[in-house]
Image 1 (cartoon, rainbow, N blue to C red):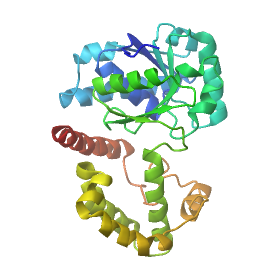
Image 2: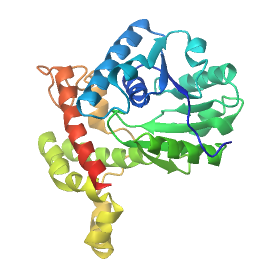
Image 3: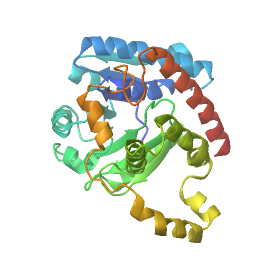
Length: 316
């Protein structure tokens, strides 16, 4: 495959939280974007959210084209074949279920030719197993975006066992060129990089909460005001080197046996799910969101993340 990749048009399959955000990224750079979903209502909502996100980016001078150009770059429809007809890159962002994704990729394989790149936004399912549903697994890879994708810089480009190496390199370079921070995940492991580290942290945090070590509020403060405060500047390995590998080793020596080694979902999380308390979207989760306006919460989050993004980019 070519070592350079610059699609004329992009299609996103699945118009949920991640799908509309990914579409926003490409529209913000002037690429023609087709957004597909089987649910017309979800498509209408997604279209409105794309426009809102583009306006937000424009307010922060983060559009690569004029606002109206970006808005007009997005089309949507329930006819999959029509939406992806001219796309050089198709990104799947449907529900996080392997069988569903494999079915989508089998269909995409039938509807596209060998020159169309097929990418999945899975958070950690096997790229190899998803690609196996196609007739050309070498043109399938993972592009794992982080929510909200139009703001958070990272995209993990994940190779399946048969993904073409040149394609993965070209995709990483392309995403860098449109302003993302793209990294290559060389081996197809569950959860890739970001979610493996994030889930390890979350598991221990829920364990501390379950054991009554501290309140949810104070655990969150410990992250935000402590090690989380340093992460954007140093990451993990730079911080260890600056503190001293010997110091890190000493702490590991006495602390590792004390960490929660559970292999099932944390009981606190399981109980919340069984109760139907999913967080902001249901009004209850770890915190009480009953009186919160979800749109206002998301808007405040995005404003803070955009401020962080400016600092992140100035430090690069």
